[in-house]
Image (cartoon, rainbow, N blue to C red; front, top):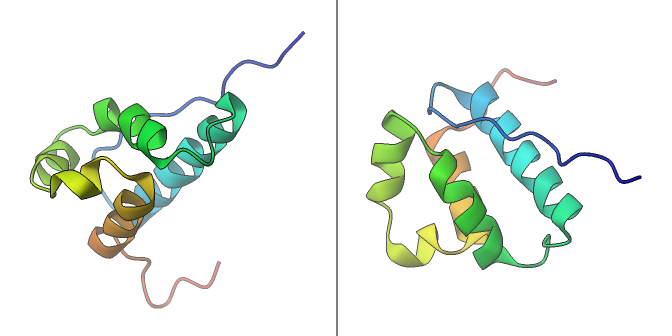
Length: 88
């Protein structure tokens, strides 16, 4: 019997920790689906999970970023960067 798909929660854009968890969860789900090398599929999967201020931010991104997980992941890290003193 196969394991259930990894859960991915909606991303509200609250902080770095939520962003980190979102990226890791999206990566895990893509791997589970066998789509880890398909940046368009991953971006499409992630798109409906943006919520509140993260949705407003996502809607304003250039189309090429919204449609490519590699670019979208960088945009997420740029918008919600890891705090300088976070060494965990």
